[in-house]
Amino acid sequence: MSLKVAIIGTGWFSKVHADIISGMEGVTLAAFVGTSEVKAENAARNYATAKGYDEVEQMLDEIKPDAVYVCVPPFAHGAIETSLVERNIPFLVEKPLATGMEVPTKINQEVSRTGLITSVGYHFRYTDAAVKAADILKERKAGMALGYWMGDMPQVSWWRKQEGSGGQFIEQTTHIVDLLRCLLGEVEEVYAAFAHRAMKGQVEGVTVHDVGTVTMKLRSGAVATISNTCILPEGGQVGLTVYTDQGSVEVNPNKLIVRDKGSLAEFRNAANPYQQENEAFIHAVRTGDVSGIRSTYEDGFKTMEVTYAALRSAETGLPIRIGS
Image 1: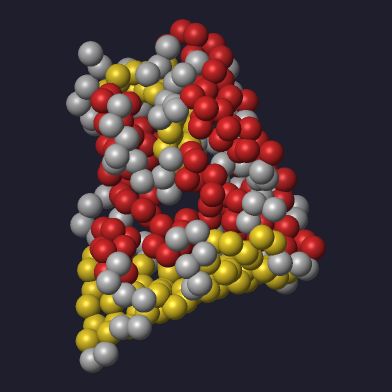
Image 2: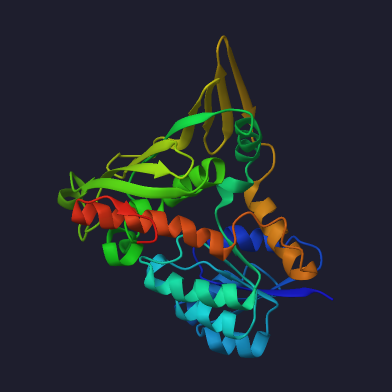
């Protein structure tokens, strides 16, 4: 029997997932939900089996999907996931989980209680570079890591507003925080400095910080610093470098670079991480085998704790212990 999948959201990531899902054997892309019926129908028009809706509950009642993808802006999370948990419908949700901790805390409690199959869209975890880096780091003593997300400001109005996106560290740099956790383990404490430097005077309606640096103490004893900016005129540098007793291990979106004494090796990604992510989730929904899912809601919640703690630290000027 074919699995029926619905997508809530009509943006770029919705299309990324839809293109992959529609090519899967035994999977039917059944519906899109948008903020308007026109947006939903426009998204659905590209897929013969899909129908457009402007109401989540109506879609769930009529389609009765086996799984749902939640691809909405940070501020729009909450009611959607609550409905899916109440109906026991597995879901894949794009990061971040919200703009603050109130919504994901409630959802995480319910997901943990019910054991519902979930996945969070931390696709870096599915890259060949990250997988190989994890294997290499098992044999090394990691001392510290430096991460970075240096780029321009996304041209969507909600991203520029703190209440819309949560800010760059929560909305974008969360990928690097999650990669840090994946490779080096849990963060215990953060201290952050954020600032407004350029974008408030250049782009209307900006309330997010446009530069920031976060220093972290890890449970292992290692330390890390992750910095970001959105003041550049175009995209810049994204990645994480881990410094070890044998050399450095650098993960970026396209490849892994290992620099040891007297040698340098590069390993380019071969597989599509979005394909891997989707296949792992759909396999879990079909079989109950969740071993291929590399970030569940519970795990993504831990990354959200770190990124939100960084915002709190920047606002208060104080170090914040995770979970406090």
